[in-house]
Amino acid sequence: MQCPLLYRFRVIDRLPEVPSAPAARGTLVHAVLERIFDLPAEERTLEAATDLVPGEWARMIEEEPELAALITAEAVQPRTPEQWYAEAAGLIDRWFGLEDPTLLEPAERELYLEAQVGELTIRGIVDRLDEAPDGRLRVVDYKTGRAPSETFEGRALFQLKFYGLALWRLRGVLPSRLQLVYLRDGQVLWIDPTEHELLATERKIVALWKAIELAATTGDWRPSRGYACSWCSFKDVCPAWGGTPPPLPPDATERALDPRRASYTDPVIDAD
Image 1 (cartoon, rainbow, N blue to C red):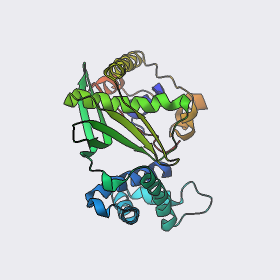
Image 2 (tube, one colour):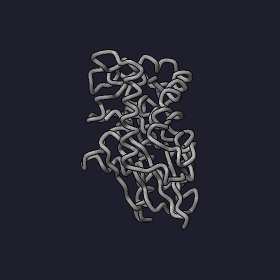
Image 3 (cartoon, rainbow, N blue to C red):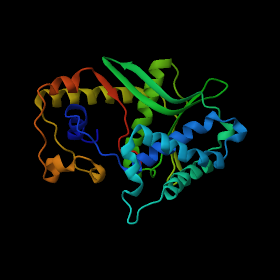
């Protein structure tokens, strides 16, 4: 949807992407908001959540040592670790103003979804799934960036509907609410999906897959220049920016089409 050439670079060429400071900070905040629910309800305070930040960052660096350099990235003056932690803590503080974790008992956290849509297997990971006593389900996804303008709300809602469709197909239960929580500006975007909306999402996914099939068979992975180019990792090899893509690998078609799967990923999370 965003850019066919970006799909090619990631899925077919499998070009490496340099981690960004906003994305790493987003991952850190997500980890803390997952871990806070390990504590008893009465202990889920802002102070307790803030105390989790250094340990979660240490764990991330242990898994990916190159992340350590991001503390000083994209800054006029180098950050100290304390400043880096404070940036994450500020986003967590805003979450506490939007939701009260002492009143929440998530049914699932970091829930992996995989469901069939025709010949496709769709998959994604939901940050949080809440279940009411009467069985109603609420999908919650955290964003550490700003809420989108009306122009780009549709793209954000597509992510929610993708998750809602996967959950519906997997469990046979239509989610009652799909919710995005934007921490940078403290806004919440939500919809109460209908079967009609999720069936329309299913048709859109199938249409997208047909577009991928066409591009794979013709080799026409054209770039789509837009606002997201600002933080794209591949501008140096993108013809829209004067670059030259690498030659397609011999198994390009197989990489694009086999196995037939559609995943919702959010690679530009927090970069907006």
